[in-house]
Image (cartoon, rainbow, N blue to C red; front, side, top):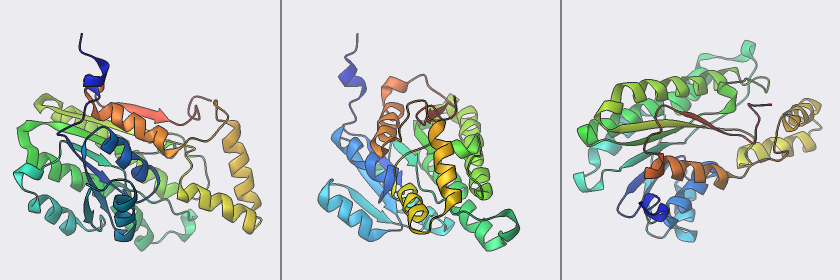
Length: 261
């Protein structure tokens, strides 16, 4: 029997994490570094990347990049040498601005889709295009809002994250036979800078709608608590490791039981 520790061994593996400067991505980076992986961190927030490297991961490779730009994504993959190619791609970057349907304009739609969905498609294209038949692991990050839209005014966010589920399953079908494992994490009720900001806004502005949304959301949590980014990072580590060697095209909620309640 192969020891469990050997399945989780990531030494010699290179991991790309997008949206790595904060929230869930920031938690993933040290978790993979602790497993002895070489981490490649992508984000538009260069200062955040530098702070993460200085404080937690001195050997991390940093790549400031605007994921809204297909050209920058193409350049990222083109500039990597064969020795620098990652073994695992984690598409984590995302935004979740709220806006009523009647107030949505094209610029808003393009911004959300470009970051939440299109960047994942282009990153996957680059990853598979460079690795070809060597295979690899892709982990996409969606949201419970893709499965069960809950908070008001997140219509475009929900649609973009539903697209991530479809992208994941289609890639799993198309590229599983040539050695790619592709799965999706579906977080919900995780304490990140974004969710903390909403809670602070509810208090500061006495936003009763946000108070109600928070209360209703809390009552659906079977574990009766919010999660921490590292709890999502641990699931990502599992999916990237050989422990998940037969997991393919899966949608894995990390939501405290929100979707099951």
